[in-house]
Length: 163
Image (cartoon, rainbow, N blue to C red; front, side):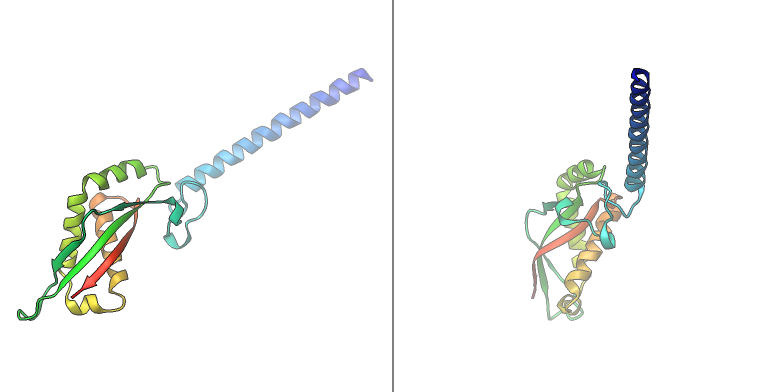
């Protein structure tokens, strides 16, 4: 009787260790797959439509409002645009800390990139209903190319004034 109890306890211990090892192996594999897939955040859930959840975005404001002339087809009419901008960085990314530091250090260069984009726009382009979204997308693409990273995941325009 005592021998059967010891045998049963031994079998149960071996089964418990085997199940624990299998669960550890499966969870490790799933974490590797989730973190290597570009459509997933580093935390294992899928990023819907390529958008990073707002709770995972670190927002860095460009300090001063940006005011510049718009491209003018008629020299008699000069138009200006004034925007405030902030940069969204995916804080769940492995490169987030480095990118945040770069964005904070390169504030002047980012302002210059935004100004160069704005100077190519006409009043008519900026007065269209979809101008705000189009401008955000163009600035985002340019920043991602200049910083050579997709960790910069969004651009936010606060004040958006065209005259």
